[in-house]
Image (cartoon, rainbow, N blue to C red; front, side, top):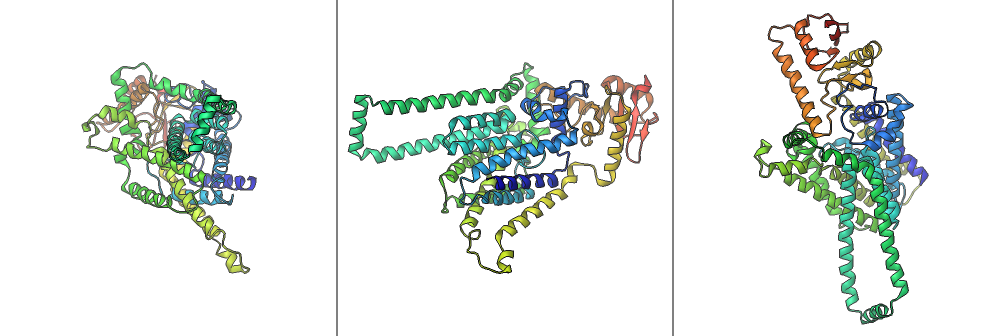
Length: 539
């Protein structure tokens, strides 16, 4: 499996490098949090970094790279680690579905091609380094060990999945558990009907019960003991990830604060992930087509036991997403929905994200399964034409085209190419000239400020805390700044008196702006796009 594993790993890394150049969308969030976790004095005044941690296991393990490497180097090293784990789980699990081990690589190419076209709720699998990537890798490893009937190893990997990302891990484990329960119930009913007609079996079973068959008793006891050991392993390993989340969910805050925090999370900050009425029509159409094609593939031949079990997990992921749509669908504004508070509290657990990833993966597996039985194993004939028109080349070309397409969209969440140089220049000046304890008011559309400037921010729209009180305070700070800038611009100038008031009410030491102004205060540094103002000079 090593050649296949390395090929899949390289495919993930190449797509990651093209689709999400360092720093990726969430890498400043995870790695800056990790650096502050290990060095609390780094950007100590930063509001987001000092908020409660939701991914402690990631910060304590992969995040430790920030102690020996720069942030850029830690991102690349972290990607190498997490995508190796993902590739390992990918090949270990999918190799039990196909006859050819190289089909794992072709599934990766098809899936990444689909991922470059779009997704349903904003969920992705291959991009930057963050907690959900190793989580999916561990879930796939747990699935592979389950197929090999190794419950203790499966429990270990499942527990690690939850520790690295509790939301994704719990949904994945729940889908697998429900699919296994349904499978066991169906099998037991099938066997019961079959054995009922066998009088010999009934007599043997009765005789064994009367005589206390020691082998049967030993087998039953051994299975029960293995199950309890697996449950114990799963519980112990998953607790490091569950405890921080449990603390966030049970924090002692007023009911009004908890309500407001959930509302802001579901219908404001993360509405593009959590509110099904915010998803585009294109996403619904695309995933409906995938669902129909995948459903049709369930009747195709060549379905191994491993694929049947995987399809069961995917089916439950789709059920979770469908229930999420029913919960979130209703009139707007959302508070007009019946049982609005209960529905809002359910939506904050991301019911769509598992199906967002697994449905394209399941379709890719079905497509490659058909190709494996037809074109991929076509008889070889001599000649250059046969070598050129191999379907493997077409899959590789589709993958490269998809990676380049994803790369062309990387500027959507960053400054334009014209302003990027000035942004990095301003952040670099801040990094070299401001004291470590500085607190900066950065632009609302700032990109990875802490990553480049290595200084604390008063508030950042991208970096939203996870606790209810923190979310409410985050929203208050954003609203305060917007209102302050609007009210004090009535005379067309931000005077030193007004800026001194801003400093007193925020505690900020410096102000970084692009369009905001004019200011009475002379900038401490400026380039063609950005200006840095020293608010401490007003003291």
